[in-house]
Image (tube, rainbow, N blue to C red; front, side, top):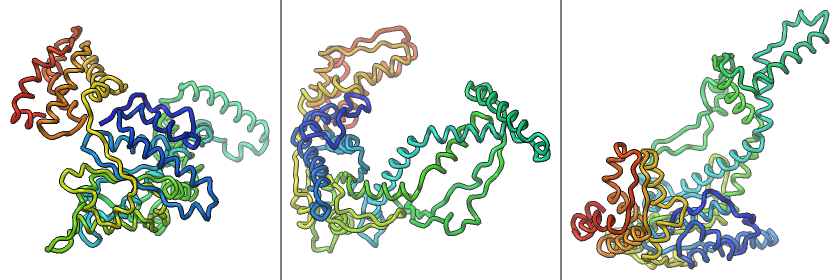
Amino acid sequence: MTLQISSEATSSLAIENMTPRQIVAELDKYVVGQKQAKRAVAIALRNRWRRQQLPPELAEDIAPKNILMIGPTGVGKTEIARRLARLARAPFLKVEASKFTEVGYVGRDVESMVRDLVEIAVTMVREERREAVRAEAATRAEDRLLQLLVPPRPINAYLRHEEENEDELNETREKFRKKLRAGALDSRKVEIEVDETPSSSLEMFTPQGVEEVGINIKEMLPGLFGRKKRQQVTVAEAREILQQQETEKLIDRALVAREARQRVEQGGLIFLDEIDKIAGREGGRGPDISREGVQRDLLPIVEGTNVSTKYGMVKTDHILFIAAGAFHVSKPSDLIPELQGRFPIRVELDALTEQDFVRILTEPETALTKQYSALLSTEGVNLEFTSDAVAELARLAVEVNSSTENIGARRLSTLMERLLDEVSFEAPDMSGTAVKVDGEYVRRVLSGIVQDQDLSRYVL
């Protein structure tokens, strides 16, 4: 389990220029420990850059070295992959392997993960395009608003003094422009055209959710969609609506789809969690559709195939797959040999130590101690944690994890919630008071629960 140490700060170096050592240093800001896992993902990311420097005919044959992370829950497997994707500004998708079933059975098809990844990439690219055209869209929206506020005069009014009338109209609009920018007209009502029905796609309901099919009804039946209706709104609301409309006009959808597909193919990252849950071989009862069947469906995706999406065909040859699992019951060798071979890099993550828990509680900007202090400050309660309180929490977390289920740093959340239960409940009536949490306070509140194994299993 790891937490952010700084806000969404990006490295001063572009990811393309970062060495594996610098990538590890960047991950160190967010992830406590796990040096080997960080080294593995840093090398994998750098290898992408190396491949892109090669001639296309050679680069095409170099497959990504997929990674299998082995370790208990709550030690940072997901966070390492997520932070790596944010660092690389790459499309990232986290899925649980246990959600999928073999093709032909009720459940999600493994190809849906690629379609979901493309949707994420399209959203990323579209947001970037919106940001790039924001200023131009705002200008266009302002001009349209001014035409609504100061409409042109009827055509017969221009027949005699067309030039004078045009100058007078422009002068009036400039006066209104100043008022518009100052917010003086925000409450005035105007009438604008808005879409009566949004763009629609065909959707299928499955037990796991809604799957969108690549059929755009708006393109098939243009007469039924795209109708406009007139609506009375305030100037402030009209500005937002018109800016959105102008933004969409300035964005080339085909270009967005093409770039999104390219990003997925060259830089996509899929994190397959709980892969140990599908590790199993055929027994005497025949194949297991939710275990070996899923592995066999997963194999072509990981090896490299073409997946049909509503934005076009996507090749999965160079998508980086990071799989993770605790492997408490099963072993990596229980995966089918073909799938094992597609995850050549295996990294074992270490269980968190008491010192790691201390760092997690104190170093990140979003550390639990800081979160609870901020929450209770809204009630006027000044909550302070001493160093011996943090040390005692870390010690108890290790003790409970060793005597019950080991859930890693997530144990800190359960301990903290129980520790501050009374303060959180009474906080509305404690405005203006200071609460100091020290080692003695922690022992008094939590020691009985930790010692009572049955109760700790239930509460923690």
